[in-house]
Image 1 (tube, rainbow, N blue to C red):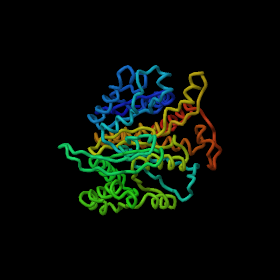
Image 2 (image 1 turned 180 degrees about the vertical axis):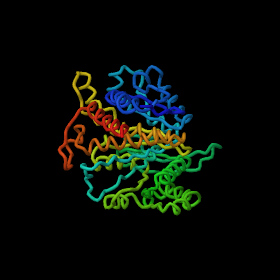
Image 3 (image 1 turned 120 degrees about the vertical axis):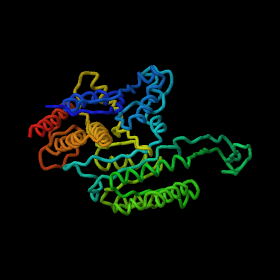
Image 4 (image 1 turned 90 degrees about the vertical axis):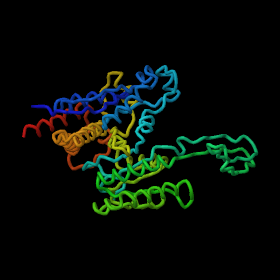
Length: 406
């Protein structure tokens, strides 16, 4: 069988632990037999990040900007225990955070739906995509433990040296805590453009929610910028496609989402998106069935699975035990990147292969062959059979071979 050729590489970012093992197995079983894969490889495993003082993460992000499409394996964001385990010189930052900052991107996460595994919310019939503004807010906040009575204030001094703001936050009558957070108009604008463009490319309605009735400046700025950009640049296209942009308060949005049938993009600020993406993924069934793509406003894409490195399974693997780790989100990261590369290069064969790979993966589960996480939730009509990760991938390959032989 002649392999599909590629003209432009995908940036490949390798990762850590069990996902690193599965990464290679996915390539060996369901990609390399069919595609003459062309990648520019970067090892983002924690050991290599230590060896390069994390320069490899920066290089990988810049390569993503050069080639437009990347696919990333899950990576460890070290805590104190990991620093000791890997003998690190410092607690390196999250690679995802570094890449997001360089690409100025927005993260879109959506579940993979299969027959036989029902969402907890019975009204949901189509995927709900969470768009998270992964910048600023509480994640970049300055915090302080107030030790005694006193006055907390906020002050802003302009570049010229003029004090433009000096207001009391609170008169503490006892110990407490203090937090100051920020955001930037430029980042909010990039977030808005990414959301509107992604909605257009996927032809889905876009919902956006904040709490502007309480946060009358901070959250209201998000609302105003989204509305301005929508009216000036995207409203006409939305109307032509028959899709809508809808704004509401975050608490009202939650109620509407629970009552909805799905099939839309829900844009959230950083913290809201963090929480809601986990809620949506769990309610749809499994984090291992959650796709993730980072989209920059200038048209760069980085695909990955939404889950982590599956540490528990990795330690079992090191003992020589076989694992039943679900590779679906990682497979869809590869298929998403291959499809986008095909779209950018006009390579229809590559796009068609990405479609076949996803269809074969879903058909494998719907036939009753699945990993342990899905086996526990199976409600399908056919009996379920729990298999190892490699057995699961080989069943997908069997289906790809059958489709190619027709």
